[in-house]
Length: 85
Image (cartoon, rainbow, N blue to C red; front, side, top):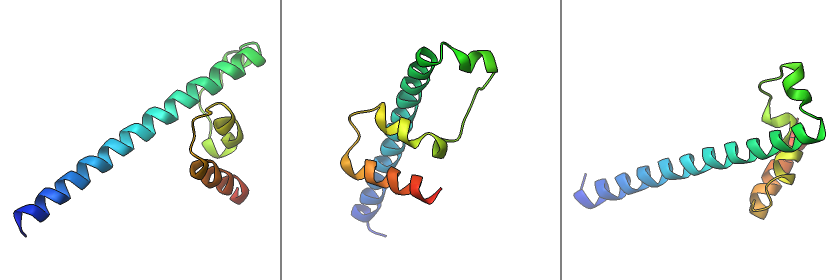
């Protein structure tokens, strides 16, 4: 394998890791926004009931609604996932 091909593969690998990290940051930022909004709406009912975690497929609509910067393609993809459920 040539050095330039190895270098390109390394750069691709680094880029993929950066994208995964950004996706994780986005997920938790939106999850935090959802939890804060729901806590205000439900007067902290989540804490009272002891609900600690939930399945993203059950809250896709809220995930989309609470983060306005989602690209259109991501919104379409998430909506299609919701329809599959």
